[in-house]
Length: 451
Image 1 (cartoon, helix red, strand yellow):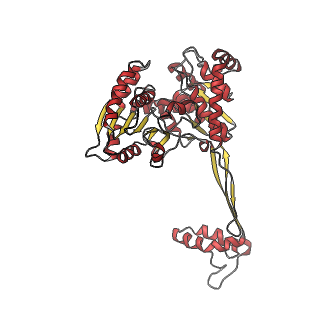
Image 2: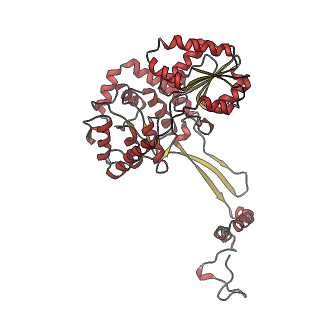
Image 3: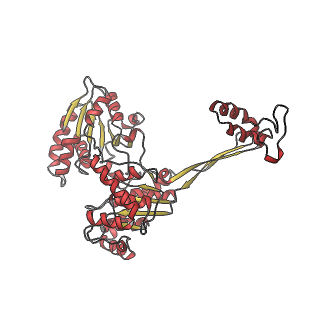
């Protein structure tokens, strides 16, 4: 794992060096995704089946795309009661957390003759993409569906890729069943995103698409944005740990490996002013890596995308962490809550050495769908508000119109928008006259000057 110092560098320069090998979209991948989207828009189910047969299941047909009640029942029987209870417990925690995020409609009557307010409405139709051709991610089902349910979304269409035999992993199907989603289609990747965005005979069009995936569905979400909404573009899972001399290198190494085992391109970074902790963590990583089942993936992530930055001070370490703006930030210091307010950019903050990221990945409450690739500078994790629309409410009495008319006149004149001014003055009896009630003025033949 790379070890670097901050001597002679700004926090941003350190962050850039640590995060230098960030994933970039290749032009070839963009062209492939664009071709898939165009094909699905033009040919609907036929294109969806064509690409699903090519990438996932060679025998897929349109009739087999929807998951049946029989398939759900078989999945539940196969996974067993212990698994179903684990999913139900996680879903309960995640939904309870997100129900606390639900905003209240409000009305303000402070100004005489004016009623202002906001109301929040669930998005009518949401599509959720769950990856899973080579693995099962029931936790992602929980972390995406539960917030949508908390927001009150009524129509959820879920897509997830089929395996070679045309089935979906039973753990994924069982989790979907526990969450109460029944409209599920055995398709993934860019073709699934396109089908949700534009609709086919089998797969209904939605208003917004959420959920993680490989580079292909991620690129597809980027390309269909504007025709539908999206919540963000997610990359490889990542963690940045802020530690001081009190941190336990054994725990630090375990937490770094917990994220490194996701994928070979998962960035895992330790930032600390304590060189002794940095060196000890490197040794722990070597020892623990040998015992990790997914050690080849984790080793690649640590070697290519991992890094340890030794800073001059804890304050500088905090500055570097903020520049990294990571998906997961762990504070492993003697007084972690004292630093909490100083962390400005993070998808989720895990406070103290007793708070491992896997609790957030599976059960504790917040969604694990979080901004990656340093986008926590301007994005938040998936939450209830991603499934709600905010609408303003405005009422003004005639007296209130008169009170504010002069501001409209001034700004409307400045911007050259005379129609704005006329629309206000029409309410005052001094603006636009109807065709049959024009008044003649001395300076204008056939009628007075119209403002």
